[in-house]
Image (cartoon, rainbow over all chains, first blue to last red; front, side, top):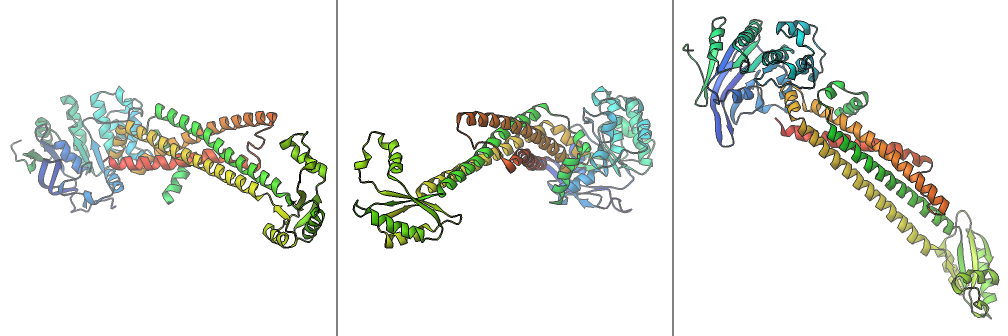
Length: 232
Length: 301
């Protein structure tokens, strides 16, 4: 698998993609693309299908119809191993921040390296300092606050220097101050060239990001995705 | 196939990366160790039974094959000529080492167990018995029968085949039965390990989900479980085999003292079996866990 993205190749591309659970259509006829280095928000009311769409974007779910392409490859034509290797190019930040509770925070953050058979990064301390978790490196996940867990999830997503970061409601369980701090980290990351897509229903967060960098907003409405105008 | 060798090598050398990401599981660990210990205990008994059955049958067959008997059943007035004709045939038969015409006293002694010491066997028209000791190459019983039929028609050869054949058949059946028991034990091990591995995988569904999301391949996830269950099976089987050996030695000693079960036990090269059995169980656990893990992981996204 090619580890780099061609300059003119979209990181994510959906063509008439739909997803149904049983006979119920959750998302239908979605066509859009995300360019490398861009900063996108995915918004919509609760239950609109933001998390489902994100799952399609990191191949946890496969489209019922149409195609979802990541780094130029259609996910439904990939083997399970290929999907695993593809996920190493994507950093995931979940609202629930699933960690392995028997491992320390550092071990959890380094988990993507562990499964890839790589040794810990030399600049791990810098990464921990960047997300403000140096003092919590040896703590177990249940000992962390909500904000610390979110930042640890971000650090884990970034440990392999991914080309894309997908964040599902990363500020859902934390206060506004911490949300701003997390957004600042993601904006810094984007300025370094990483593609960022954040699913959120927090319009204030989107407005704050818009005030600092150029962002595009995708909105899920009636099970379809559309680019939002300047009304946000 | 190459990846399986790499995995076995990983098992021996150890892969701490894969092992550390899965939390220890108490219940399935005890279940696997206990089950494999029990099965190994029964397994070593089945092995010893098969080996002992073979030894007993071989010994009996060898002892019976060491001699044959010729019965001369002529009337009393023709007996002497008939015996002389039979002796001539036997002395000129290839493979016959020596012959001995049993005396009247020896023949009487043979009948005592059946008729008792007070029976007047002298008055009975008994056949004359001739003991035939073959050479190491042995003689051709069918050829000798044909010669006796032509040259000494009153003589009948008993090469003990009617005793040997049922014994050999019984020994073969006992061996087959032991192999059947070993097969059942192997199947049970596979079933128990598969169930325990599935239980462990299900209990760690969240861990597996997290690992998959951060880019773990199925091989990586399976490796942690495979290593764990293989080592448990080897440890359990070693415990079971040691207990089995102790039980077999106690039985064998008690049997020898009482004059039976003298061939029961492990002898010579057969002592390799206690070493082979745990490795065999480990191999079964390795493939059972690997198959169960990869199958279950394929069902997960």
